[in-house]
Amino acid sequence: DQQVKQNSPSLSVQEGRISILNCDYTNSMFDYFLWYKKYPAEGPTFLISISSIKDKNEDGRFTVLNKSAKHLSLHIVPSQPGDSAVYFCAASPISNFGNEKLTFGTGTRLTIIP
Amino acid sequence: EAQVTQNPRYLITVTGKKLTVTCSQNMNHEYMSWYRQDPGLGLRQIYYSMNVEVTDKGDVPEGYKVSRKEKRNFPLILESPSPNQTSLYFCASSWLPERSQFFGPGTRLTVL
Image (cartoon, each protein chain N blue to C red):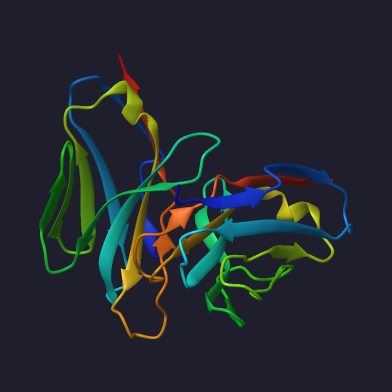
C-alpha cells in the first residue's frame, strides 16, 4: 500500500517556466513532509520541508505548498536546466508516535527543456 | 566535509555468495538507515538503527542483516543474495529519523 503517492512519473517543462510536482498521502498521522532531489549516480539530497501546521514554505526558487487535504506540491520558479532530476516526496508521522521514519513516494522525473 | 560513504559503488555477484556493503558517516548522527530503490517503487526502507547496538526492521527486511557496533558504521549484509535483491541501495543518516536525512552515493548491486 503506497502511503505517499507521486502520480506523475515524469514531467517536462520549458526553461524559465514554473514546474509543479505533486504529492498525495493517505496516512493522516503524517505531519511533516520533505522533498528530495536526486541526480543520476548520486544519492538523494534534501531540498525543502514543511510541517502540517504551515501552508507554505519558500527557499529561493523552491516553494512547497500544503493547502489541500492530504496533498502538497513543490513549485520551482523559474525552472532551470540544472533542475532536471528525480524528485521524491517523503512524509513522516507525528513525533513520539512510535514509528518515526520517512516514507517515500515513487518519484517524479523532471526534465527542463532549454 | 560532512558525508555518508558507501562501498562498493558497484557490485556484480552470483546467487548465494555472501556480501557486505559498508556505510560510514562522519556527522556523529545517531540514526542510520538502509533503503533500496527500484523502478516504480521509490525508496523503501530495509533496516534502521536508532543508536549503537539498536537496530530494527524497515519495510522490506527479508534477506538482509545489519549491525551497528560503532556509531559511524552501519554495514548491510546479504548472507545469501538472490536475483530479486538486484537493486540500487542507499545508506542514510540523520539526527532524527523523521527529519531530513543525508544519503550516501548509492551502491548498484546486480545478483546473477
